Image (cartoon, rainbow, N blue to C red; front, side, top):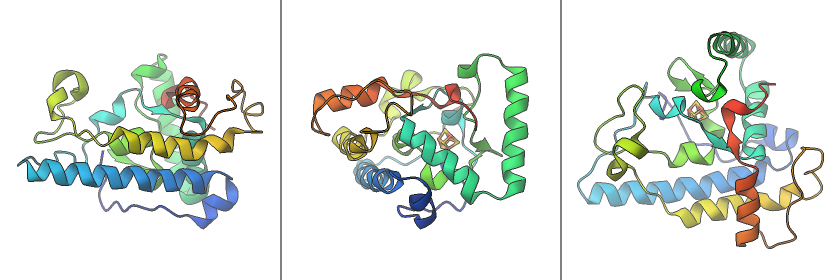
Length: 209
Ligand code: SF4
C-alpha cells in the first residue's frame, strides 16, 4: 500500500544508533525498492499501470510476513519517530482490535492507521514488493489468489539479497531473541535463507511493545 505524501528513506541515523542492524536492513530495503522500480518500469512498458495508491489498504489486512529485525525496526520507528499522539492512537486502535477480534490473523497490521502506513519509511520487504496492476484491490480481496496475473513480480533475487544482508546480524543475538540457532552458512546460501524463512512470522502475531 502507498500512503499519501510518502517518501523512501534508506538511511536513518537515529534508528541506526538505536538499533544495531537497522543500517543493514535499510540497505536491503533500498535494494528491494530498486528491483520494484525496475519491475514497475517493465510493467509500464508492457502497457500496464500501477493500481496501488493512497487510501488503498486491502493488502495491510492480510497476514504480513516479517523477520525479527524488520519488526524491531518498525517498532523502533514507532517509538522514536512517531509523535506521542500518533503512538497513543495506534495503541488505542490495537487494544480495540484485540478486544474485537481474538484471532490475530484476522486483524489488520497494527501499524495501519487511517488507511495509511504509520511506519512507511521502514515497512517490511513484503510490503515493498506487494503491488497490484491495473485495478485496485476490492475490500477484502487477496489479489495473489483472485488475480495472480495482476501482481507485480519484482526480482526474487533482490529479496534474497536483502535478507542475506541481515543474516549476519543474528549471530550472537539469536538466543536473546528467542530464536533457533542460525546455521554456520554463507548469508546468501540456501541454508541461511531457509533459516530466515523459519523465523519469519505474521506481524499480527508479534507483541505490540
Ligand atoms: S507495515 Fe503494515 S501498514 Fe505498513 S504497508 Fe505493511 S502492512 Fe501496511
